Amino acid sequence: MKTTNKPSGLLSIRNRILIFSILVTLVPSSGMGWFFYNMTYKAMAEKNRQRLIDSTSKVERDMNLWFAEREHDLKIFADSFVLTDNLTRYLGLDEGDGSRETTDQVLSPVKRIVAYLDQVRNKYADYQRLAIFDPDGQEIAASTSEKDDTPFSLPVDWKARTAGGKAFVGAVSFIKGTPLSVIGIPLISNKTNKELGVLAVRISLQALSPYLRNALAGNEKGPWSVRLVGKNGQPILAMNFPEGQTETALSIGQQLQLFAHPQQPVNFSNKRWVVGFATAFKDLPMGLVITENYDYVYADVIHLRDRIILTAIIFTLFIGLSASIIARRVILPLQTLTRGVLRVAQGDLDVCLDIIREDELGIVTGMFNEMVQQLKKNKEELEQLAVTDPLTKLANRKRIMTSLDVQIENFRRYGNLFSLLMVDIDNFKVVNDTHGHLVGDAVLVQMALIFTSMLRTMDIAGRYGGEEFLVILGQTESRQAMSTAERIRQAVEEYPFVYEDVELHVTISVGVAGIANVEDTDNSLISRADAALYEAKAAGRNQVIFGREKGGSEKLPSSTG
Image (cartoon, rainbow, N blue to C red; front, side):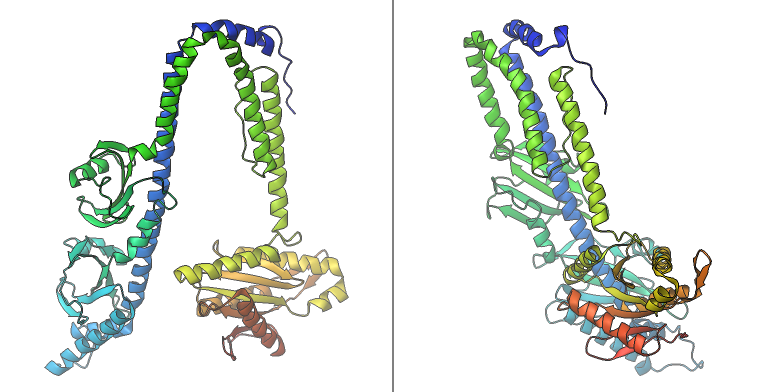
């Protein structure tokens, strides 16, 4: 531990108090008060700016995810053979026998496309209209709806924006007061890999309202408003608190002024002073404007200003009480240390006190910081040990179950698919009984290395118990999971397990389960995977079996050993 020499002479606390008692009478109290107020105001302004940045960043992430989910759904629909095959026939790109098609034969693909678009539109309440456009941007077919059949067109630069198979989000428009946007994705022929046109959907943006409501969640101090606006300042959606208040509303010109200074609070004088803040979304043709009542945002600073003025007057009248003020110079660092100790006692180890003095309190503060850093290091090591299997260095059962619960929650909230692999080493008891537990431990360690080398960063493998491992494959549907499980099985079968002079041939059996519906739990998933594993064992081991939700299983064709 670093040591500090004992302060002496003028550096002692006693001498500093004496010197400060003399100098404090010479310091203009008004200057001190103004300086403190100015510094506090800047700190509060920066804190408020960071709060607004965090709020808008959260809204932008949520909205980007919302649009990404819609683009993902649209890509799935675009890959449908109903669209690509019929559109290929309609455009005359299908390689037939050279005979000329009749009018009925040309219209039939369009009817099938329309039927498919109607089926998709009826499934999603946000979809107002779906349409297919040819490579020249001309509408070929569209969904039919009693609600709204108003046609729409593609953006002028749609070809450039769909280059490389990318999706695009169009500008916001309004129909009967409802904000709408067009999302499009190119249609590519599965046979010829040629671009057939564009599948576009006009979608309602009303579903974005909850994200605005969450922008300043918990802020009930005073009037505020959150507005989703276009690049030109045109309002799209708005959320006010309290509902119906207009004192925080800004004109389009004021909103554009905010966008000229992104992520910087600007004060406006309307009915009352208002703090405005705007940020433009990077990947979407829109932005966010947050306005709040100035008096509520800076209520603490305004209150502090009044207190400083009053204190300055009193301080000027009672300058003779400098001794008590000097005493505070000693007490404040002690209070800082006390608050630091209390934070550590409550479990907060991110405490680092500034060492601004070269006296006894400076020594104590430095030792306190070193102690907290050592405690934090020890805590991190213990936390790592608590979630890691000590032998294989994989996740232990507690951590793998926690990760499984997170995956289930993400599926329920966002629809993110994932799969589960239950892996068991075949005849592992024979290995232990024949070669000893050291060899068995070496097999487990090398098995963990195989998992680590073959899994992606979004996947996680853990030791479930004994020779059983549980693997979570993120964003993976069942067929992909079966393929991954088979690759792991083959890798294990071909891997030379070696410990000292003992070389073993080891195989595994794998049970696979995929998330099926929102009612699935960790127990139901593990039960299906475990049942499939048991079936793989019963069928001769060294196999991959998929466990279905309501009985039955699927065996992946593979060699067995």
